[in-house]
Amino acid sequence: MLPAIVLIAGGAQSGTLCVDFAARLPNVKRELCEAAQLQPTAARSVKGRTLWVRDVKPVHATLRVLVVGAIHGDELSSAAVALHWIRLAAQLPADVRQGIHWRFVPMLNPDGVFSGSPTRVNANGVDLNRNFPTPNWQRDARVYWEKRTRKDPRRWPGATPLSEPESRFLSDEMSGFKPQLIVSIHAPYGVLDFDGPSVPPSRLGRLYLDQVGIFPGSLGNYGGVHKGVPVVTIELPNATRTPQDGEMRQMWLDLLHWTNERVGPVQEVAAAPGSAPRTP
Image 1 (cartoon, rainbow, N blue to C red):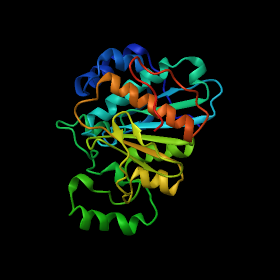
Image 2: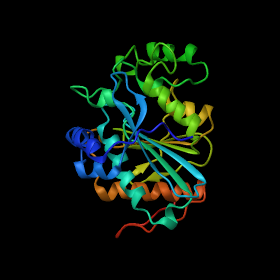
Image 3: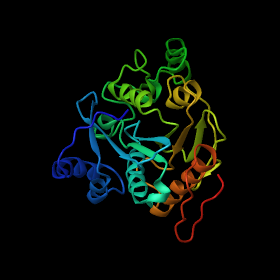
């Protein structure tokens, strides 16, 4: 099931959206945003900002992959990398693209991103990555927040699971789109995390696997452990600066290679000059 998309003229999109994205996100020029051809959904943030998506889909797709950036609004590099990956996905040759339907949600938390000073939480002060309905959420989420985070306001899970329009939107995407793999881009810990079935990738680019555990209400817990959908969590090394373009491409190539090996029948992609896909 596709998201509710409202088609708009490219000029209207690029006139406001891409100017804003380029002004706020690192290593994002207006031209990159315009080339992403983002489409608005019917979903809105707490403050009424549109949640945007981009589908890159071949005619005969057999595998669905959902890529999500900026669940935390102060992790600006995560949204930027998602936009760069849209470009790479759209540039794949048709024979390579065959079989994989990519859905990108580059900025799940626009209110946090476009706050005066970007914030981890959304406009209601909720950490969206603690707001998903994992088993025993009512029992565990608040206890974890109080005792493990010492009531850190940046990690408030909300009053109830899926209390926020942004987390509800992503949950609906998981139910409707039915991804067989979820890739969640974060920052700034510089590691690779994994939840769910399958053998995790040992590395993507320069990021090595370092599974840090699961948290009540997190997307990894909800998708990977509860729903049984592999969730690759990418922690970029810096929240306000993207990796170099070659590194972003290598991460993308490694993700494709691992997906081919462990998730679904995706054809191999030629590496960039001076690099090669590795066995993650």
